[in-house]
Image (cartoon, rainbow, N blue to C red):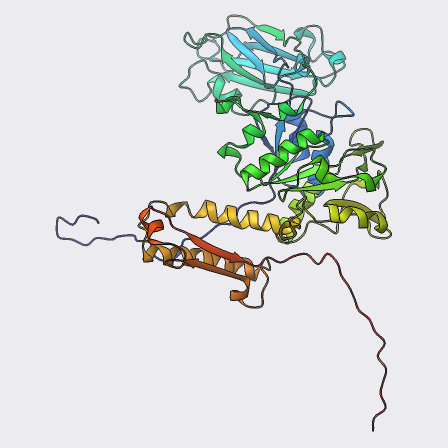
Length: 510
């Protein structure tokens, strides 16, 4: 209670009634896989050009991350965290220059294509002395185009693919232009810069200096273990372990383009443990005998993942030639498109795959009859209607959770309620709190019902919320437990549409 110690007029702000529940984002994806370069910390990209700037271009025909990202954005995706996977024994290039340690943002040999140049800043004081220094980073797409010395940069036929110029950098940590603040906060897509000796600081360079980042090994082949590198230090976690940090809580869909099944299983396990995420799994290529595919034998029976077959042919973004790619990138984009246009309760199916020009294998109805009951979602070509996703099932054998839209609707509802009711913890556990919590959840579910997410002609048919003596015993209350029971009737997709047509004859009137 506030204190009133002297006469006067006091104004108080109080809270009454329900608190709003904000629906969580459901279309933010996370992609895990090998890239040409880039950091291993999950990094948000909002366009294909963002990806090219931070993680490089198409560099290996068997690395599908660039193609998956292109298909994701082409099919309606808006936000995606890229989690670069690299072997544990891959090396990171670093160079010491002018009192600075310049380190590549990620491991691998691609950073050997970079020249670092350090010199005087452009702005001078009254005495004509530079008030800061200048650091330039130049990157070439092809190693053969990298000049032999920094002096020929700008005079050779091949200009850098990326040039970063940081001018008038300060060596004073208190300055807003301090080089660590200017370069290391995401401004550079290529390097990180630190003092050689953090305790001694950095002095302004006495003369120009330059150097090429040394060659660093790419390491051995990526294995399933590289997809989930845990560490007691959160800053050192990689892959799926890094995605568990609170900073990436917005991720709702997880996909590893073209991953082998042992890596895909790690993605599924991650989503099951998280409970608020859903996995998209690619079939393997060259599986001509579709009827022999057993998705649940390759990936565990799960309600937190969906399996898609076959691969699709697209036009390569660079060369224009036909390229066979896994379907998951396009499917994740269709998830986002459906969520944003209709809602998470709408099955992400019967949507055209933008950018697809053909399928690896043509699937007819007879083949799909054998695949659909096993949780294999097929992509089919229909005359006059294009190439479409034609399945919306999870990998669960439990009929309650066999549809992607039902599982993702519950993820949406559970995550929204969980995130928006944290204020309840440590509140007095009495009738006033029970009424407020019930009203808060009821208003949220009423909105979802009106938008078409819940089944029922009347509100009481669509959902129910119970809290109080009917849900808690005296022991629960004494031990600090508040228990709310929520019943939800989700809408399910019309997977089998049957029109029964009969011939109606006119009877003679008497």
